[in-house]
Length: 145
Image (cartoon, rainbow, N blue to C red; front, side, top):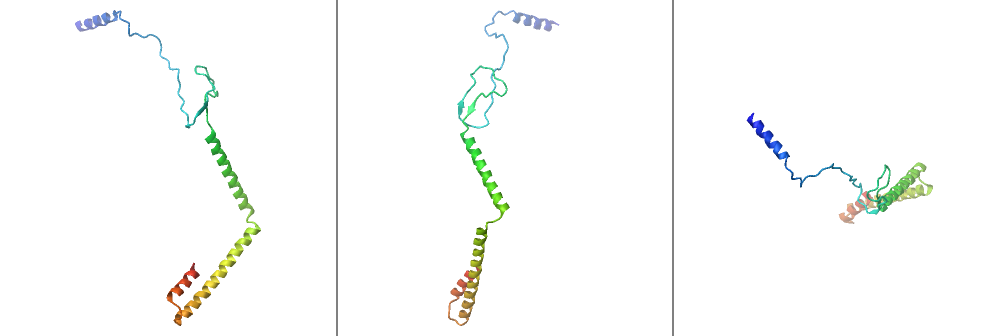
């Protein structure tokens, strides 16, 4: 009991101190809200003055959008290119393209026939020992290429 009386006396005596130099009265409020930007761009305009109230949808800062506009233009160009390729695939090849491809096939077939004839001639010449094995190997490589 005696201890409780001592604690009570100390508590009451500390409350009677008149030194209020470090006393702060009032409420603590936070009036600053931080919204980090989603991109690192240069600020080009601050349409709202600091301290003014804003409502939902009010633009409070404008960033430089040059890079975003370029990125959008690039994406639009890629979409147009893809659309053109799709249209080309839907319509099929033009007659000129088919003719060029046919000419390439005919040229390749002619080269193959000529290479096979050269190889068979080289094989006959090697049997008669009129050419070197290197010439035969070269004609074989040309045929198989």
